[in-house]
Structure formats: structure tokens, C-alpha cells
Length: 289
Figure 1: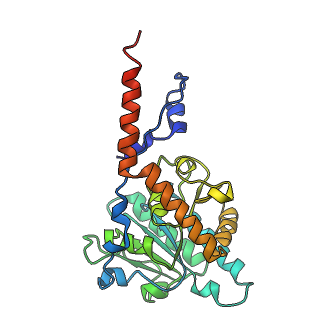
Figure 2 (figure 1 turned 90 degrees about the vertical axis):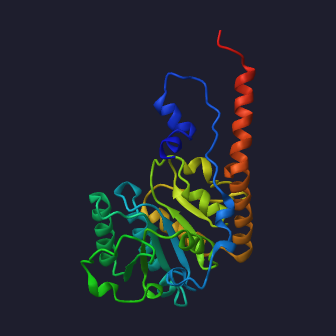
Figure 3 (figure 1 turned 135 degrees about the vertical axis):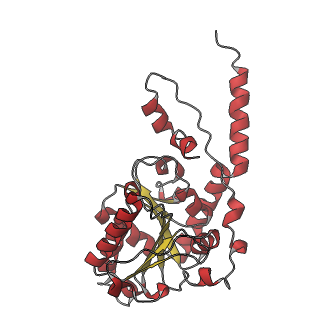
């Protein structure tokens, strides 16, 4: 699937095959949208209960690899908290960030990336917890800053969720407390993350390069399903503040647009429809002369 995704954006195709002047018809990989319904969430599951919270939550789903640039989420989260500190109420204290993704302790990139993220959290003065579901065969790694991780998962500023279960993913994506999905990689291929977020009605904040520029609609505001910004913490914090301040009506309208776009362009039926149409048009062109 990764290789398929690499060539499912027009930009990447043109970069890889500059001698081909024709702009290709893109058929995007379809995802099973039914897998992201609230009906799949079992709230009595201890693993799910341990990661959910009533606190406003920013969510990032990606593997713990350096190229995924999850540090951008931490830096912009810290800046957002600083911005909210000047407003009335206890918004900064309540807001939390969940970084969830695949982690393999045998891969040096995974280990170094997680260590770097923990150091970033500590540098910003943020509390954190590293956890894994009970079904995971990978134990939580030894932490270099044990004192900073003694709180319960629901009480920390940042929750690092390694090798999340399908149930945990669905619960976090569909939780009413989740404010947005943060997709941090730059120049990424198609990437399923933004589509997952849109399928669940979440605003998506992603980099203004690669696949998200084709999956996420950033403008005009009346058609927006997310925000596309350069990978700079200040710009991301400003976008997050906009998302945080969305009214209930604005959030509801955006959620409806996002779900509709996910269904019409990136569902399994959409892929089958577009693939059949592309094949029929190709066959209609006849043999090459």
C-alpha cells in the first residue's frame, strides 16, 4: 500500500516522470469508512477508557519516525497553550495532545524519535505518559524522565500511545473531546491520516505539501475541511487557535463537509467508481498508433 500511495498524487507523478507531458487521472486508494463509526467503540474496554478524556484533545496519528516530524505537533501545542494562557479560564491546563502511532524498539529510528519527542516535552515543561494497549506485544520503553510521567494517562499534557489498537484509534477519532487531527509530515505521499480525520468529521491541520494538498480543502472557508500550513510551529499554533475558537455551528458545518468529501472521493465505492471510469476511458482510446 505504501508504494501505491507514493504514486497517487499528481505532483509526485510529475516529479517521477517529467518526460510525460500528459497530466494523469488519479485514482485515490479507498478506505473502509464503516471502520470509523462510533458503533465500533466499546467504552467499557479498559484500553479505550485509559486513553479517552473529557479534556479538549488534539490528536496525531503516525509512526514514530523522524520523517513524520511529530515534534512539530509538540512545539505548536506548547505555543497554543501559551496563547490561551492570556485568555480567561483554565483552557491551557485542560488542553492535551495525544501522539499515537506504530513503534518498534528494534528500529533505531523509532527509538531515537521517541526519545527526542520526550526531550521536547520536557523542554517545554509539559507532563507526559507513555502507554501501550494490553494487547500489544511491545512493552513500554524505559523512560529517561521518570518523574515527568507518573500521572495517569488522562491527566498528562501529552499522551504517547504506542501501537494503538483499532478500538483506541476509533475512540480517539470519534470522541466529542477531540478538536482536530494534526498531520505533521511534509512532502508526504497520499497519506491516509487526513482522510481518517475527515471521515470522522474532524478539522485537519496538515502541511501545505504532498498528499494533503489533494485530500484536504483549505480554502475557501465555505468549502474548508481543514488547514494547510507550512511546517512552522508559529503558523500551526495560529491555525490551532482558529480551530480551538470555532463555534459549534462552524464546527458542525465543517464536519459535514469533511465527511462528505471523505465519502465522495476516498471511500471504497469512490475508488471502484473512479477506477472503472479510468479503465473504460483508457480502453476507449484504442491501441497505441
